[in-house]
Every structure is written in structure tokens, then in C-alpha cells.
Image 1 (cartoon, rainbow, N blue to C red):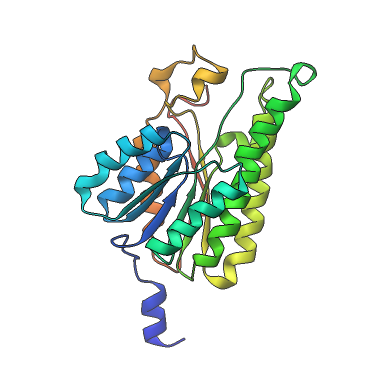
Image 2 (cartoon, helix red, strand yellow):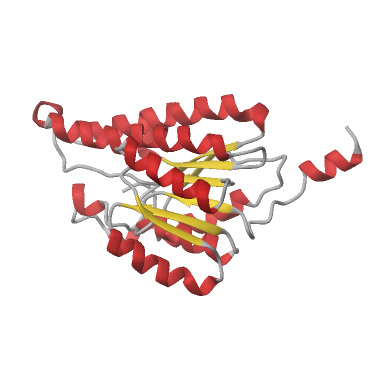
Length: 249
């Protein structure tokens, strides 16, 4: 291998002026990641289902002197995704980073009491939505890009009463691992982000009394991910598992 190629492959990729899509970017881990990327000068595409929250987040990040495209998108809806990517092509023409963060949970139900519509909504959002976004994004990505799928530690663990959520995350891990193998030769990195208990609103759905003081902050997850994104191009973190020091809750 030539010295020039070796130098290129080992270079640390600057995030300044890269283009990143963050789904579910109006709160929690997605919002923290958006702030972290903006602080490094990364241009952002912000999506979520709450238009008011998108406007608020856009105002928060406007002082960073970056380009921002904030657009409502329901990852369950192929037409909504088509509209989003039409806007991305018009404004940026490319994608360097994709953060598949959009996700929902459900109240605790044993399988015999789990409503089928709840199952479908969780699977459509957490698994099928991840596929649909990635499927559209790959057309705009080149070597050196990175796809990050926020899975949570539930991707390789089980918790009674959370069948739909667990199934969606286990499926998303399988999807992520397969995607990584397919994209190796294209030099697109794929990271499975697997945070443990993090203080976000999702706990209100299945454990409102959860001990928040023992949890990590979304900013901690974003900081760890930022380090992974800024590794030299010839290195990658394939699975980024981050846990509270006190252990699992």
C-alpha cells in the first residue's frame, strides 16, 4: 500500500461541514447527539413527528453557524420518508452520517395481553423505520460515511413485559450486523449504539418509578459516540455499549 493511501485511510475525519441526519432528534439521546454534532460544525438534518419541537431545536442550534434542515418525518410512513429525502437531496446532495435514533417503547404487557396494534407500532417504528431510513440514505452515502443505529442494551437482553420492544431491538441488532458486513467493502462504517439506562422520557412508558439518579445522561451517550465517529477512517467501533457504573437497573 502506498504511503499516501495509508495516510488517507488513517486520517481522523473532521466532522466540520459533514452532513448528518438524526432521526428522533427533538429529545433525549437524539437531541444530545444533535447538539454534540453541531458543536463540531456538522451540518444537520433534524427529524421528528413534533413540528413545534423541531422548530425549538432548530432555534437552539442556530447559533452554531451550521446549515440545518428541520423537517417532520414519520419513519413508519414510506411517503413521509420519500418527502424527507427529496428535501435532503435538494439542500445537501449527500449524507456523511446517519443516526437512526427514532424509537418508542410500550407499557408492560405479558405476551397474552399485548395488543396487536401496540406490537405493530413498536416494530414499525424501531425496526422497519430503521430499514426504510437506511435504505433511502445509502444512495447518498460514499466511503468514509458512518451509520449509527441506536439499539439500547435490550438488543441482546430480555425483560419480561417488553416483548414488542425487545423483539424490535433484537431484530434491529441483526439488521445492523448484516448491514455492517454488506458495507465493509464500501468503507461505510456501521455502529451499534447500545446504551444502558439513560435518563430520558422513554422510562415514563414502561417504568415511571425508575431510579433516574442512577442513570446516565443523554449527553454522556452523545460524547462517547462523538469519540467513535472521530476515529481514523481505518478504524471503527462496531458495538458501543455504555452502562451506568452502578450496573443494570
